[in-house]
Length: 332
Image 1: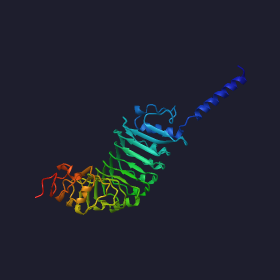
Image 2: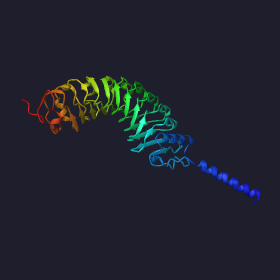
Image 3: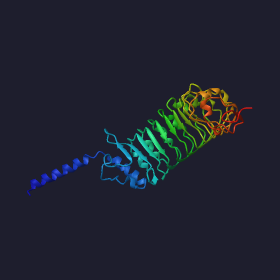
Image 4: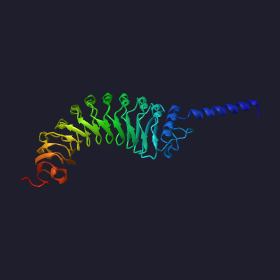
């Protein structure tokens, strides 16, 4: 083979390899971060095809990862019900194009949420639920201004709810329920109106009163159940409200129920195990209740008549001071 032919073959080979390399969509910085992320999770079998020699945008399947069609940068990570044991690597913060980060029902995931998430300034959807992560709710979440959805439920988070969450102007969904959070609910919710419409803070160890700023929100669902909250929360009710679900059971709320009015959309109301007194308003019979429980309070008087009230069993009404009428025994 003459020298000119050899040169031509080598040139063609180099050109082919160059084109092959440049054809890979996956950005090297994203691939590096994902491999560190995988390492932190214990290199699980579920991520066995995360091979550094292949394209993370086209060849890494299984748990959802997606590349943006225009930028070719990783913008979605979504894991559900996976068998992995490890922690969240700080390298997650290097995936700066992420708009969605979701880990759900990964029971062996432990450790804190790394503070490097502060670099995820494009993040809109953030969920880590049903895991064993611990530590506080990160203060740095307040710096991710694009967030509309935060769900950190069913974990082992401790500490207080960061007041700095008031700095999230677009937040619509806040789920911090089923953790070990303590202290009061911060007086910040009025700053988020009218965007915050779903509030889940139940099954924690929260104390104190519910901020009156809740009254200014257009809440669709509010869950404050199974805490140690107290005081008058009658301001959460009203015929102008659009709320359809209120879970307020097992606290120390104390107010006169006879003065309440109800929005037409309210169809799930749980008030059991509080200190609520007065009588049940007659207008309650107009709501198409799917869930209604006022047991273990201090209510008196006759249960209003109507199909929407009498279709519940005794257990939704019993253990009150002097509540009577179907389905309870007749009034004397």
